Image (cartoon, rainbow, N blue to C red; front, side):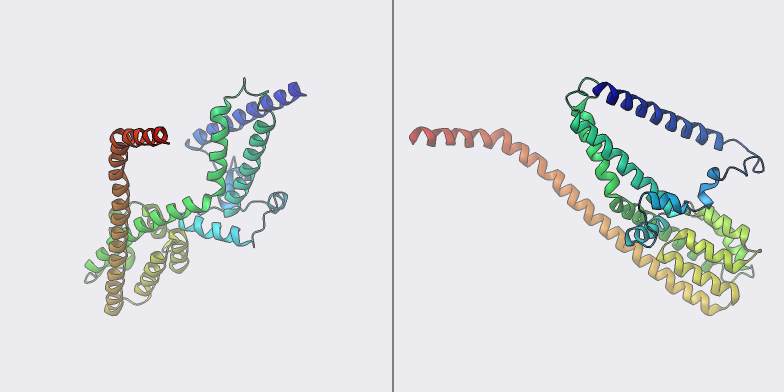
Length: 296
């Protein structure tokens, strides 16, 4: 029985190496220029623009109407992921099953596998990996928070540039084109907006809002849409008010970061105190305990 289990483990390891190797080769080949018509019949290569098959979701008991799925979908949108959230939820559930099976195998056959797998490292590593996958909402929120702050900073800069160009006779499209060099995180989204502008400006702005996926992006797109339809001084005053709101949020984020940094520094400052207690005070405490024990 143990020989059969060892064979299964070896096959699983070889299969994992094959899968990761194939993924690495595909990632390298995707960087090369390719003809879309030749690969058009391979739907698996266009997963970014297609939803995950419903049968796959039913296989792992995943429902799109579930609150956990909808929460992860919103978080992924806030992180800038434009692909279907079902791919992420499906991959997460599959990884949870695979890692749990590996942990079960290690626990049941720990004596047999001790010579093949270093259990002192593999056991805690698998548990840590399982914890990270299971508690993915925490780091998704952290990524969304960092990205939202970066987007707010860039929207603040772009808004200031638009306000600076308010007296110019340029069209709003030309003004946005001049703001591209001041962006970094949303440069690709802004360039795509400018490319889609003259096809359908309203739809392009809606897609731009979805790609940004933040509250500040929503208000920014609403202001751009108003400036597109009505080139009025009043809307630039609205933009000035929005700039004040963006600046306030950036200042609040800076204060929160300073407070978090002060907590970390406080903890770091307590390490030498603990070390001093261990080196100088703890021996006297031990000697005092020995003295009381001898008196008793």
